[in-house]
Structures are given as C-alpha cells and as structure tokens.
Amino acid sequence: MSRPDPVPAAYLADPAPVKITAPAGWWRLRPTLGPLGPRLVTAELFREMNVPVLQIQARLGELDSHLAFPLTEQIHDRLRRAAPQPHFVAVYAMLTPAHVAGDARLRPWRASRVDLAAAAPTTYGRLLHADPPLRSWQDPGGDIRIDITAATAARAEPSADPALAVAYRIHHEGLVVLSGRSVTISGHIDPSSDAALRAVVANLPSLRGTALTERQRDFLDASGHLAGAVAETTPRAGTHIAIQGQPGLPGTTGTVRMVIPGRNGEHYLWRPDVADLPGHPWRDQRSRLIDTPSELATPVLAAKDTAVTPPTAPAHLTYGALITTVDDAETVGGLILRAFPTQDGLIYEFQPAEAGQSPRRISAGDVVPVSGTAWPDLQTLLGARQVANLPLVVGERLLTLREAAPVVDRLRGPVLGPVTPVDTMDPALDPDVLAAPDPPVDLSAEAFPVAGL
Image (cartoon, rainbow, N blue to C red):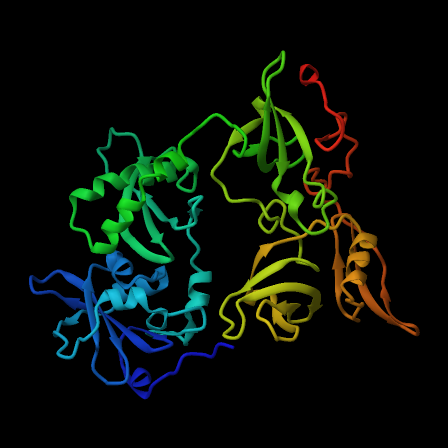
C-alpha cells in the first residue's frame, strides 16, 4: 500500500514559489538569471541533505523535458510571476537528469504535495486533473503519447490568413521527452483535431537540426512510424471510424471489421466501441456488427469511446464502471459498486484494484471516469448485481440507459423506490431502443450475400 511522500522541515521553511515532494526527496523551482542575463528556471532536487543533489536550469517551457515529468499551467504561472533570483551553482550535485528518468521515486506522483506561492497546499494529481491537454493521442504501440497543450494566435502580417501556434508535449516510455515546442497551423483548423495532431508529427523531423538531449535523440529514432500511424487512409479492417448519426441522434465511433463492395459503393461492417461495455447486449457477441455505407464513415485518430465523455456520459457512474483516483495515496482506482447522492455531492463506493483492499467510498470529485456501462434497464442491472452478490443499500441510486431509481428503506429491507424513465436514445449504446430497418449483421449466422449489401 502506498503512503504520502515525507515532508521535511526544510521543505516547509523554503520560500521558493514552487515546491513539489517526491517519494525520495523534494523539488524546489525558482526563476533565476542565467550567466548572460535571460530569465530561466532552476529546478533543484533535495534528498537527505539541505543542499541540492541535482540542479537543472532551462527555459520554463522546456523544463518538463529535462525533469521527465510534466509541469502544469498553474505551476508555469507561479514561476512566470515570481521575481527572478541569482543563480548559484550547486556544490554537491551528485545526480543527473538520467537518475530522475530512471528512478520513479525521484519524480512526483498523484499524491505528492505541491506548494505554490500564495496558495494552499495541493497535490500533483489534482493539478494535473485541473489542467488537461486540448488533445491527447497514444500511438498504437503505447510507447509514445502526444499532448497538444495550448493554442495561441500566431503573429502574422495583417494581410496574412489567421494562424495558430500549437504547443505540444511528448511522452516517450512514460516520461516527458519534448516540451516547450510548437508548430504553426491554419487558424481555421481546430487545435484539438486530427489535422493538428498530424502537423505536430510532421514537425518532428525538423528537430534533428537543434540541440537535443540523449533521451530526445532516442525518441526521434523511435518515432519514425508516427507519420504512418497518423496518416489519412482509406478505411480497412482495423480502422477506427466515426459514424454520422441518424437525424436527431448522436453519432458514434467503432472499428471496421470488413469492407464490402456493393453496387452503390462500399459498405463497412463495423463494431461500436461501446459494445464492449458492461451491460451492452452485444458484449459477449463479438460477431455482432453494423452495416453502414462508406459515405457516413470517417477515419479518426480518436481514442476508443468508453461512454464517459459527452454526448454519451451518464449523469453518474453505476456498477461496472472503472475509475482512477485523482490523488488518493492508497489506490490508483478500481470498479464502481454503488453511487450515493448526498447533500454534499455524489459519493461512489468502489472496489480498489489493489489486492487485499476492502470496498471504499470516495467523492465523485476525487475520481476520473475511465469507462462507463451500458445496462439497458434496471432488471438487467439488478441481475448482474445479484450474480456479483451486490445487494441493495439504502440511499444508493441506480441508473441505466432507460430507467433510474433510488433505493429506499421498507419493512422488508432495502427496495427500489419510484422508477423514472431515462431518455438516452443512443442506438450504439442501446441497439434495441430503436426498431432499425436493417438488423445488424451476425457473422456467426449463415453466410450472407455480398451482392445484397
């Protein structure tokens, strides 16, 4: 079981504008004046001694890539507004940035304490939670993550078309390797779009002509496949696509299983992302697919839809949903068991992912939803809970795609209270809610004629 970081007396007494604990030390960050005068930031790592064992000086935007962990905009703001101090070379600097990259105990984690000037202490996880990127994309191999962190108007001649400077940060093998970089795109492009992401990838080869660290060179050597991974392609088996919804209904995303030629153009046989959620009627029917004309589908680089973001996000999570915690020191997250509306806000009961832990309760504001559920009605949800030996508890509220109900106390014990209808009306989440003119294709059934598609 994890424990909060130690907080030494020297940490508490230090007047630096930014201080961050780590399991095996603590960091002090201050704006400083370099040898030639430009304003830089000095990050210093302290361990047992009251003198720094590592000292890194860099421009604020690029500091993350030297530290190997991200600094949030709130941290950047404190450092920009703090008065710069003279830079003194650490005498006992015995560690290098490579030590920080190789030892997680020297880097902050979600429960690490953060002290910002003129603000109450907070945690590293809560700062990260409050400062999400505009767009985040993980490469198919899982080793590289690109975050688009900001977009600002780029300076241009008055007669020029509007342009945006898109700032990005890149993680390689779980560590920040590039930060403080930006690429210019047309002002007509959404900075969170696939087009902006492709512009970031296209900009990477130009970095080889700049001063790079060993980790940055290793990353560029490992990034050659990214151009192909983000390239616009014609959908084929395995392509992630966005599907245009019927009039008045939301669209959805899924994965192409087959491309079928037809008299009037190609059709895609595809499986919705949400079909894998607990409660979805197709979850255990892997061969259930939907037939859609190609003109209604667009290839996308978006992550798999897990029904926790609009427009598919529910009012609250229910049994079977997965969460991570914002800054809980004892658990990374787990499985939602129950939801309790209270006067002070929503409370979840969940089963932590770590072995040996008992169910716990946590405020909804202290969790990050990872994946939701697709229970069509209360009967289905109650059946699954009975199998899981999860009885009703007074005060909890059950929520499904079509119905919701509180649990109230009666003479015979906890029972469902008044049932209210829920109007989800999402045919991907709840394929039985609408009478589709063409039933989905079941590949486990007898062969179907291609010419009829």
